[in-house]
Length: 489
Image (cartoon, rainbow, N blue to C red; front, top):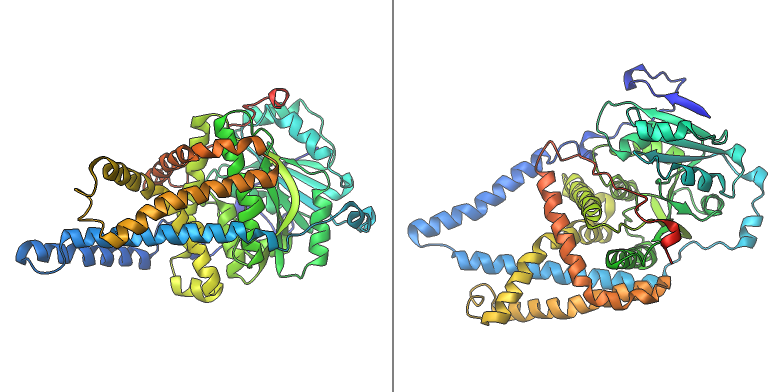
């Protein structure tokens, strides 16, 4: 097995690596806000504070209650839009032209016609799962001589390096030592690995991934039959341990709904698809032209999906499954989910630095879908606790304290959204369970509002980290190997 020590960027010569386009600073999450955003936020605050000050000093202008009513009305409209959009995706997924390949399709692609394929496998403190991972990747139905498996390991990760030293992986495996410069994130490691990639196509797999054995062949066939503008094919993710506890049941239902329904709905209408963090297959040359991953964005996958759409290129969904381990411990789940939400905040802020340009590049339909998928749906996890508290206040005191904030029309629309919307969202998750054959999980969806409460906890943690420069790009590591395969039934 080859071990590659990557030197500092300034020391790399053209003969040692393949050039990747530089990601423009305006598309990087290195800065939290752009200049226009900072000025816009200041002007917005002034537009609110000045009338309130005028009201306090002279009695002229809209009252504080008016501002409260306006805020409630706007948030209510956002709720209605987000719920309606999610329902449209879920119930429209059935007509999505997802890529399906049968065994007889794959036999039409002989081994000698297969291209070199690069697997990027970022690892950090994964010594416990490394033996199983190497065996699983070795068992992929793809010629070993046409595989380049890059194990991306941090220079000071003694645990993973020590475990690797005791193993004897095949010649297709190469260890790439990641230098300590820059942010210590998965996208940074993948960018380093991409500089060594020789494959026509490449894919990311995480340490706990269990891809279908024929997934690489299906991806090759997809790229061979699709136009060049399709630069990424996303496989579906699901969890192999949905029955560990209540948390994994909800997590598995969420993944089932997202990958088997929502993302297919996005595919059907050719909307921008926020990629999953693994099993996304790329044309390597196109990935390099895009500038690869943003090392400062902690959901580099979702960000890349939006940049692909802005370039006028496409992502397609493919029927091939990669199994992962669902988080079964609350603290570990909160850490993982807060990182995902923080990355969605980053992605929305980055692409909204120039809204007019984003609108031109995406078009109106994709522009609105971007907000409903990445921006507004994440925003609702922040405001959910506020509206839950208002609901409790309404149930205990009636309209005595809420009438000032909720005119009749807004009150009835808000209550309908709360009751009917939550029921419909529960039904969507039940539909996801049925789609994936998780029949035992359907009943657990009756308690899923508690799961949404946990999302709000993670969302507040994410926002707290986002506003702290020292934690803004911090990658909270997800611990794997919490559940033994033998104990899963």
